[in-house]
Image (cartoon, rainbow, N blue to C red; front, side, top):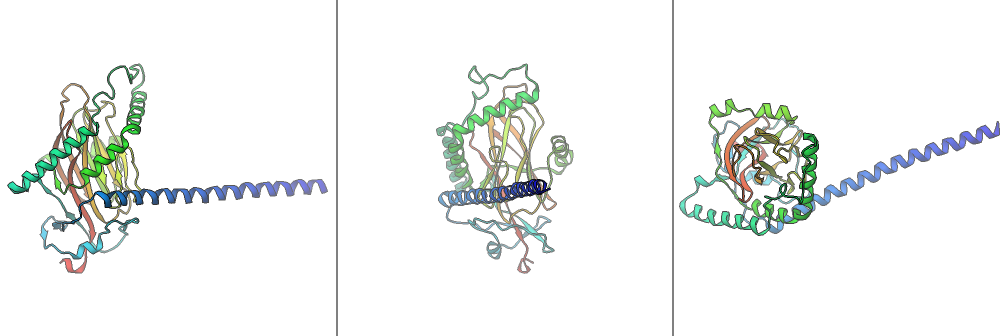
Length: 341
């Protein structure tokens, strides 16, 4: 009997030890994860502080119906500047404002356009100097892909090749993105005609690929086999793209297509499924890889859709392989105050 009690005591002690280790492991994991997210935000904030323009323009403001309302500096007090902890939009009965904060090149004066063209040329030269064109990523004998593999296996193999490229070029790619983020003028996209929007198949593509919806959603669609990439510059200072698909502020790239030329009706999607942070969002498009397929040229037309708390804006534009990443547009999410009326 004494032996049985002794064995029982040992068993209980062992169980408690395992239970304690499990709890300790979860605590340590939480601490490490929290510090990792904080470090990401600190790095992003430091990068923006170093490279961002010193003067902040007050955006032209729109109410949900799209009509202009008077500019006001009051809204700036509600937008976090370079904060390590982004202000999150909480569930509230207060109405939200989606503001337009970028003009397009066709809205510029002649003098402003000349200045923009100089900046645009500098961006194109920057992407060349950093050797960020990837014409040979999937060609030649250096990185062969076994055609006998299944489509899924080929895509996985291509992702591995791209990850290898990123290991070598992640630093210059981040440098180029920071350079692009300074631009305040959109690259010339157009608001889509209502008829074109009605006939667009954005929803079908997103459903096909399992794309999520949420409070803030940015989607990109194009109609050839090229590999375009969607980049989102978040209010927190983070950038969501194919190599950093989830941000500490809650955003996620959940659809990333055409690493291999698998579709000529591709779509990508970045979404905040729950509360999105207040502040300025900037949308960038990068022509990552030209795939030599039928009806696939080095100039690619694309469409972008921005959905914020049910308000939808549709745009169209184009980008040529070899161009710098394009700053497509930006918008500001803020909370309406009493002085906005």
